[in-house]
Length: 392
Image 1 (tube, rainbow, N blue to C red):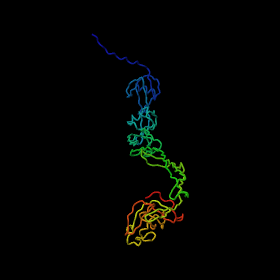
Image 2: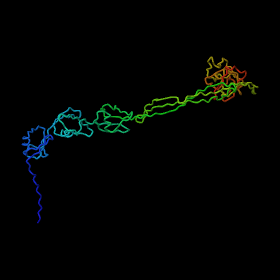
Image 3: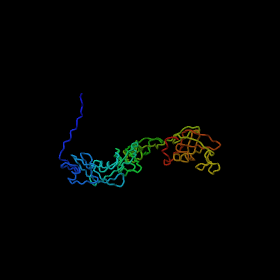
Image 4: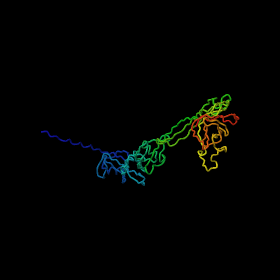
């Protein structure tokens, strides 16, 4: 029958020396009970000092130890979360261990000064800044985070949010964290837009004695000018908020167009139902007709039926634009007969005439007709050489 026996531990060899460690300083002293060793070494313990016997906190029992370590307590002050500072006595080797012993719990975003790994020294002042909750609106999203930064820009840096160029924040980046925890990052983008516009060249008219009246020829085509404008456009979070003119100049100066107009007059004749007429000018106009009761003047008015020339309106008196047909001009209008320019009207502009009738012989007109300017030819100074090119 086999019997298994457990091995007995070999007792640690007894030595006649003890390692005494006081604040990291090592010396060898004669072995003995912990209390006796400390007394022989002249070690006086403070209320917060700690003694370790072979790595275990000594409880004043009468034991011996190969290694005795004395950890002197150090005093420090702690300010946490804006509260009044308080004193601590601790044997902790670092700031972080001291805060742990003092029961101060930390969140990852809390800030401790000096750093948690800093060796603890007597008189050290420790400050704990509690992280504040923040809601950061940036790039179309809302980021919720904690920050112990003292300014907005520090909080953004801790959250990995950078500002570039003209980006800005609300509140200001160099200001303190807002009481309500709301921060907005405004992304700013600017671009330069170039535009080009045409500046129409002036038109200069020159008389051409060798060209028939009412004809036009191009003497110099000229050239339109080119104006360039550079505009700075500012966008905030993708929306345009402003634009400023950075530069504006004429890239090409306009050169006037020179148009020649005919001043050569040739008297001609044409057979009409009213006989052969002599004329020195003719062109097409749009013709309508009116009579006293159709002129828009009340019958009770003293000007009812009276033309601009002072004559009473009858057939043969017509309304014209006096800029092109002076009052008193004698005309022939096919289908109407001989006429004298004797009246004007608010709507009678350009190549437009209104044929007058009395109320008894009124006929309605609304068509294009050729009018003839009857001889004799007037003085050159009274002739409107340039008439509108289009018919209303």
